[in-house]
Length: 126
Image 1 (cartoon, rainbow, N blue to C red):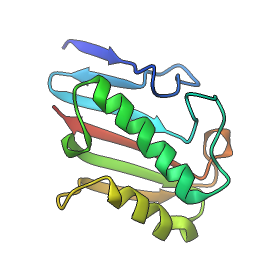
Image 2: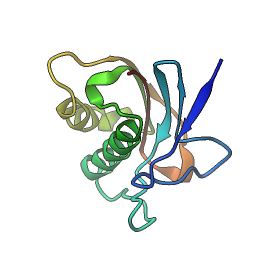
Image 3: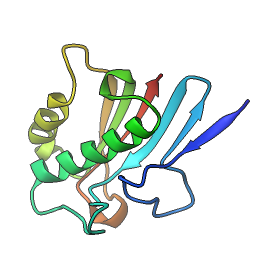
């Protein structure tokens, strides 16, 4: 098995001992992304819509670094701190996919890194 580490300078650097993404064969495993703005190093947490957009932009840059896009995603996992925010998160999330969105699950959790409200990871096939 040959694995290639994928890192994009346009997405936030990992905040722990993990890679932004790992490519094995034609499958890309993208680590959970939070709303860190890579340009400022600040979190976007003042509005769930803005926060979710930042998460999706971070995913976009990592996917692009591997030569992929949102249409390459086959599976996502969404972690939310409060499912009451799900409708707004879902609306933003859905705007990034065409008529064939990937499989996914959404899980409410008690706490996320840096106390953010949403984290999203994905698996893509290139």
